[in-house]
Image (cartoon, rainbow, N blue to C red):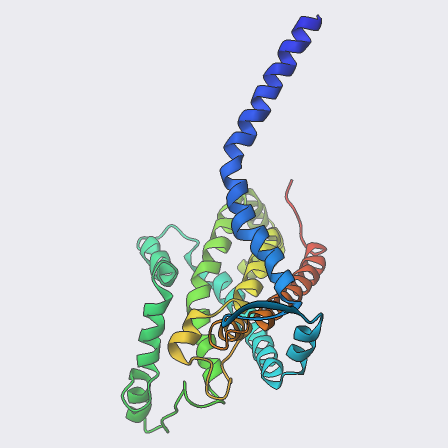
Length: 301
């Protein structure tokens, strides 16, 4: 009996060693490109350091204090709050609506799904350039249409009153297709027996949506809401291509401000502090969102 136990323990040991050996490349990758940068960023946030000098000077919380006192950071924080409050619900509503429209088996629906999702498989830099030319005053397509209807031409990317909303349109246009895929996947996982029973009871389309589809989509909704909030803070590429944060920081968002601080002003310490602040804000918002939405979520098990 003892020999049998030893064989089982050796087999379990070999399996564990094999499992850890197979996991080691992934663990090494995560350690090098996730945990180390995370710890290094927190460490640098307490130092004065820039790319022109290798010396690090410990300054405690000075980077955090100066960041909150910086009027540019305050403006950027307000821009990102407005941006997220508009684009997150817009993407979810539009993505859910598209998923409802395309959750059919009619001819051509696959082509429509691909067309909606297409911006997500293409370069955002290229599409940002296209949008920049579309919104260029006087010569852009949008300006030509406005002139055709004798409307005043607006400099969408050069006017502080319109530039942030122009970026919102580009973001929603791209993100809605991504959101649609998740909702579409969730809808196709709902059993048709619920809808058949509701039809027998005389329920209409809206009743089925609010009483069956929406409650059973709540787990997907929690996930979609979380990554949409996170993505709304990470937008950089379109800003670099279309506005470079201008005019007067009217289109500057948190991630772009961090990028500019680190690689335009070469201030690694301040950029690290801003990164920690951004992480704390996103973590707090997502935890609050998860705490609220999880109570409303029904898990079909």
